Amino acid sequence: QVQLVESGGGLVQPGGSLRLSCTASGSTGRINRMGWYRQAPGKQRELVATITSGGSTNYADSVKGRFTISRDNAKNTVYLQMNSLKPEDTAVYYCNAREAILSISGYFEVWGQGTLVTVSS
Image (tube, rainbow, N blue to C red; front, top):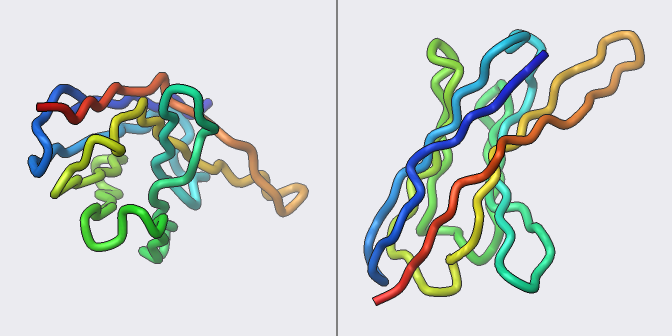
């Protein structure tokens, strides 16, 4: 039932900043974690940052100190503030959500369509 829509991608120069947004709709009450993943050409999809319903965050080593993930529960939206961008940050960024399945104490994954971030001079 959960659907995710990303926005905010685009072209930015090295050292610049972008803010990505992801809005969830549907059965949002069962979401216990949201995050951002990215996939660069020729590479596997990798985790960038996650945030739980309780506010706990986790970051990939490559983005620590530069990226910040945040969440607005009232708006059902998660953000990724990206500063000091590097060419190697170029990738399609995907929003992710884990929706709890209480009957088995588990979850299933929901993915957005992705938004392209290009860092180039």
